[in-house]
Length: 73
Image (cartoon, rainbow, N blue to C red; front, side, top):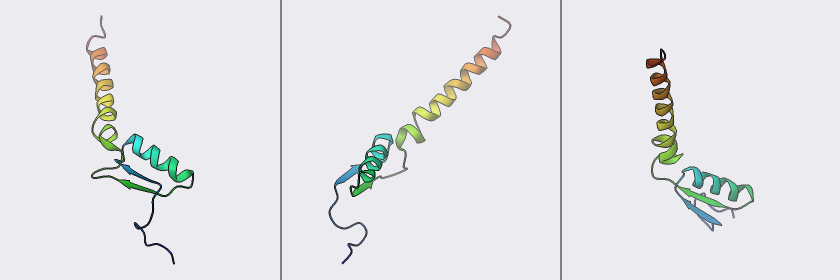
């Protein structure tokens, strides 16, 4: 009898689908393990959705703007 989805024994339970969680879950599953990935909000975590990636785009744009403003120097 096949187990129902979400029930049974897992080799790993990963809490948080941020960068490290996604890599851990994918790596475990890729090695044949059964993984439960638990995420409360958006997959990708704060860094991808709210923090580092968007802030890097803003910082880069600000540097370009600063270069343009002072181009005559």
